Image (cartoon, rainbow, N blue to C red; front, side, top):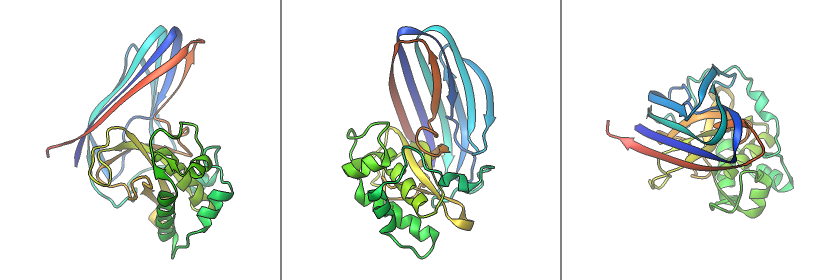
Length: 268
C-alpha cells in the first residue's frame, strides 16, 4: 500500500514566546514493513539543528525558533510504501536491550485491577500470551474519545472502562510487563480502522518482545496487529517518552495547539 500523509501542528503563544527548541521524532522508522518514498519536515521560522538516530532506532531532529514567536507550524508531508508483516518488526536496527522496556513509568504503573487483568490470561508461549493480553485489554477498555486526557494513566483508564488508543497501549504495556514481557509504546499513523473506516488522526499501539521473534505490534484499540495500513514513527517507554514532538518554550505565556492529520491511500 502507498500512503500519503500530511500532518500539521500549529502552536500559538499569548503573549509571544521569547523562543523555543524542539526535538522531533517525526520520520518513519526503517524496517521491512515500510519504505519512505518521500518525506519533508518543516518548522515555520525555524532553524534545523543536529539530527541523529537514537539507540531505539528512531530518527531525531532538533529545531529552534528565535523569538518573539506568536505562532509556529510544524508541517510533515510525504509518502510511505507499506506491506503487511503480521505485526512483526523485522529489519529494524536498534541497540537498546529489550529488558529496558520492563521498567514501569507513571503512565504504566501497575495497580491491583491491572494486575488481576494481567494474571487473568494464560498462554502456550509468549506470543500467545501477548495476543490474549491484547484481547483482554480490548474487552476491558471500550474505545470512547473524549473521556480521558493526555495524562490519564493505564490504571485510571481501566477503572473508567473507556479510553482511546493511548489508553489501550498503556494498559497493554502494563499487563505485559507484569507478566515479564518487555513492552513499549509506539506512535505513528493509521489509514483506516479494522472495519475499513477512514482514520484521520495520529495513532498509537504497543509492541511486545516475544523471544526469538522479537518485537511484535498489538493494537488493542482495533483488536489487531499492525498491517499495511499502519506507518510507524517511533517508540518509547510510554506516550510521553515516545512523543513525536517534545520541546521547551522560553517565556511565561499560554500555549495552545491545533493538530490536523490526513492519511490517504495512493494508486499504485
